[in-house]
Length: 211
Image (cartoon, rainbow, N blue to C red; front, side):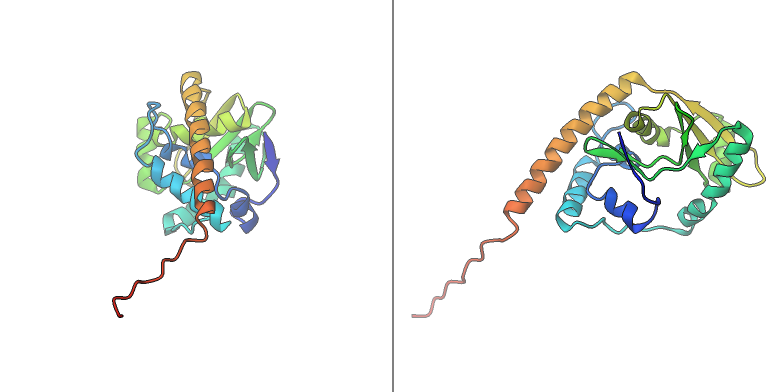
């Protein structure tokens, strides 16, 4: 695993992960049950386009997403306070042809994934009291990429109790994930190769019926 030292969210970070499957998108490749995702082909074509254009696809960021990004440093400091751990921020972690951008590495063995959701979402997490399944592929993928032994998942909303759950590797799922990632990356290379061969299309001259 190679760490590319760039600031997450920066243009350099966006370019470092351009055209690569990343942990936040692993749910578009594989379901939590280990089956191929219905979003797989669309994600494949998106990344192929990014590689050809050498720039990431622009993504919409709503106010809730922006708020979550702005609150992350506060949540990270809160995690350090309640856990007694020191979080090391990293840029992009690259393993083979895919990667992850964890919210921080913890000691020699751990990592942390932070979410700062809307209050309604946070309350639902508290009532369930378990790791939210919608982040299963992302967290398991982050553990796979970084080689860490565990990930602390933190849902944070100021003034409310936090949800902090330690997640360990799911060996069976990670085996399936690794297989799907390898297949996906091979197919991605093939699609990119085909697109490059067709970069200069053959333009057929129009035929004329005039004599």
